[in-house]
Image (cartoon, rainbow, N blue to C red; front, side):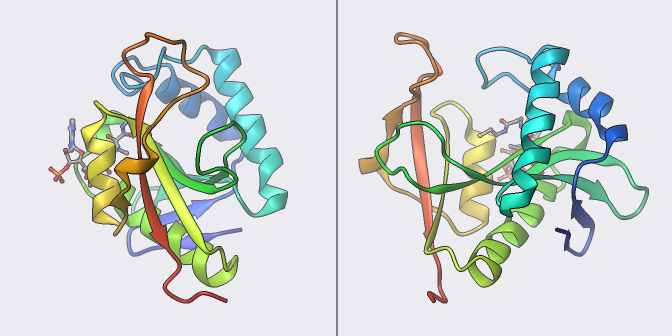
Length: 179
Ligand SMILES: CC(C)(COP(=O)(O)OP(=O)(O)OC[C@H]1O[C@@H](n2cnc3c(N)ncnc32)[C@H](O)[C@@H]1OP(=O)(O)O)[C@@H](O)C(=O)NCCC(=O)NCCS
């Protein structure tokens, strides 16, 4: 599985990506809208899950910059595996290292993932969600043509009750070329 855009290659994970991915997921600034920066063991868990999910065609991929081969972060699809009002559904998501923010890489990569979801996988719809405070991520959702559905806002079931990051917003986009 490989997706190419003007500036990026989205490709399967390789062992050499483990350490740089763990550095990103362990960075408190990158992870400020998550409950906590991930430990090395937790980051390895994310890595292993993404590798295992590759066989399904629905996974986060390594986002690499064509110019210099830099690993920018993770971008891609995921099956939602916990109870939210819209489940079952497929989600598009992203995490980039902070030195790569502000250059439109996440929307470029995510748009290509939506095209893949609609034209190759023929999914009827893709959703995205994040905590209320995560405005950068919501901007990415808007830039790739997703629209917020306030009726689908939800409390993230894996974040403790009362935690400020628990309330989430949900964005949707439907397949313009349904099967
Ligand atoms: C969300 C994220 C992927 C954005 O990626 P990106 O490639 O920078 O996207 P863009 O360049 O299109 O910028 C999107 C928005 O991010 C914000 N942004 C850009 N550069 C930024 C910076 N250096 N610092 C903080 N926010 C910034 C702006 O609000 C921007 O919107 P604008 O273009 O209307 O000004 C990136 O911020 C990130 O990885 N964040 C941490 C992980 C995360 O929250 N993931 C989402 C979980 S649901």
